[in-house]
Length: 567
Ligand SMILES: Cc1cc2nc3c(=O)[nH]c(=O)nc-3n(C[C@H](O)[C@H](O)[C@H](O)COP(=O)(O)OP(=O)(O)OC[C@H]3O[C@@H](n4cnc5c(N)ncnc54)[C@H](O)[C@@H]3O)c2cc1C
Image (cartoon, rainbow, N blue to C red; front, side):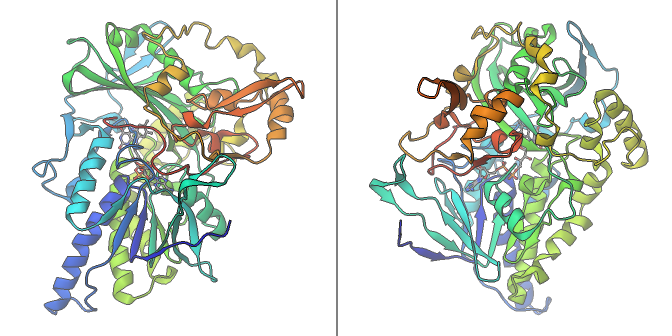
């Protein structure tokens, strides 16, 4: 289709309205004003830059719609961004008042006498990150930043030298077969001197840019986990506001990275969830069912007894940390937040590092405008700033944390203890290749047939445990059904043949939203892949976990997807 597109000339375009980019845009405004003032007063050399045209594009129907987190926020970064963030109305839910660490066996829960230091959270804040992002977006708009919800960035634009020159937003009003409908609106080309990718875990544009510009060369492969979460309202007295519990053990087996959380929020609401490493070996694992099974543990079920599930969501977490960070810059482009692997896997915290990375990107951008150079020559200073900041001090000592778990839970726990004492050195039992991409670790079905009973005691009774369809309903997912499928399976023949035989079509299990289904086709007399794309919660698991790497997640029409308001 030959489409005429509008071009909008911006100075800086931010892709994704998560904490990283919202902080980046806001800080950019502040640093820019400071720079110009200092130059005017003759205190700083350089030139006055003046006001910049800044845009943030967001694929969700509003800022926060696609934001899902735990979340306990370490306030270190937001305090740097806005020292009076509480006075300015940042919607924190509760201050953390107590911490606990539970080791769960099949029937028992043992409370650790000492909470491991990385999981101590007193003084931090329990938040709905979705609400915090909505609030940050208001602050951005007050500062004159343009925010465009319902505008997915679908493609990166490059010039003839592979310099990134902006993004193309997705077309609207295309039918399932790819033809324009009556409401067709072509995407626009947002041209920018600097494009900042803050798309969160497994960004669809970040993935393209990393491949095209070779940003993962010499780096270890990224590894991911999947967090599956529900919000519950529970009877008063079941779980205190401000209490934070992390768990290890049940229901994960010792080969599979996993752990749970319960955070006590205001009004007897609890945030409860379970993280499963997407580097598991057993193709029969189903992270959604792992979470449901977690809730059947007597110690967890007691917290939820008499309560009601309010909301559901799932999202991947980029868990590899320091070794798996891409080169964070290219000509015309910077990568911030979880797209750049900024999360601290040991603390399961990425909000503060996302915010700080955005702030450092903003400071780099001011330098680039000052020198009127948007190539790697100036943008590489971003990575230098990261390595000179507390981000490095926090992430470097835990650089071997996740890789150690790829050798199993027991050796990892020994390893983690030794890492803690030695500033992060790796101690024995690490996989030879260090971080191994999750999809490469999945083993064949034939080696795991006996584990088919893993979820036999999970009843999906719609009181304590929920099937995927019921949960998806609680994620408020909506996609226009008459649009092209946004989950591109590059070779569906593999699904019906090799994958069925070798792995038993694990997409049916790893997707937490029942998007993938193997359905019998009478004409071909075999089961073939059916994609219920309208269920998609935008977690990106399929793009990551598919053992053949033939699923490509691309942005659907703007505004479609989950509604994680308040999550
Ligand atoms: C289940 C779970 C629990 C967690 N718990 C905690 C916790 O307790 N504490 C903590 O500190 N961290 C926690 N984290 C991690 C934390 O949420 C992330 O590290 C942080 O949100 C990363 O911020 P970000 O801005 O990089 O990306 P995100 O918060 O993921 O935001 C990215 C935004 O970009 C948008 N987007 C993506 N692609 C496009 C595109 N192509 N075009 C337009 N928009 C796009 C998305 O819709 C989204 O709004 C948790 C994460 C998960 C999933």
